Image (cartoon, rainbow, N blue to C red):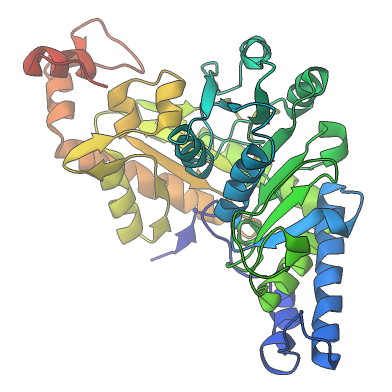
Length: 421
């Protein structure tokens, strides 16, 4: 059985050169960066080099604008809460895109419980933020606008330069979550006019256990973790030196290999989508078509009449690692807030999986996935009451309506007396 890993957005393997660079800082140069002896000085120099490499990846002015945290989630928390607390005298209003990552949404909800207010800006059917709605949302009390670069679910690339211009016109700092794009798309904090940017190196072949936060020197930010004066006093706690060193190497390699990586995954993305839509009936791509509006590593798919969890489990049994876009919580299926925001039918959102490509994925891997996934869908539909009802004309397809029956969501609402949410 072939093994194909298509969950690169969750984690990527560590680059061998990053691993080699990390090793001495576990055993030989194990000192604390705050120490004044040779071991501490050696470590501080290593951290400086890593900052320089990270700064180069995103076109920052200086390594002094780069701060290290434990991961991207902590970086997002620091960016949102740190700016909100630092600027609460000006106002207590935030503006975010409705399809932000949970680390952003939950940080905002935390602040809302403390008296802040937030306007969530909608998106179109492809997940692109509505710029006119964004303009209207910003007020004199707004202290931060948060818009991601690439959507973590559906791969949509946001018009960040236009968003940055709006924020500049309104004199409001912009925070950009680059979790899904760093190492895979060009990031230019200067042309964006971004005040803050965050990401995790483990998504582009760096180690886990380290996150990055870029802060423009003009952006006001207070610490949310209190202790020592590490990271310029912005993030207390002893630095994870080996992981930071590995992150620096991964950033340097990503910058060098960016164009070949994009070209490689773009070709495979087109091959995968072409194969799936040819050999699997009633399948839908969520988000933009492969092209300038979509990152080359992501396909978010809804396969009608079956659920995402079943697809994920059978993929795993056949050696294919993917992610499911829906999750079973408290016996009720919860759909992704991103899929809800783009108006996807509830039944399609339940039948959702995410496939993400990597630099080492091959054309042969894609051929295996296409052939195997077709068999998986066929098997699951043979056991699906929804597929049976569709065959008998009781319910209709949302993807390719025949006019013979109601959609599954309409049918379920009629049976239960409650609308499907």
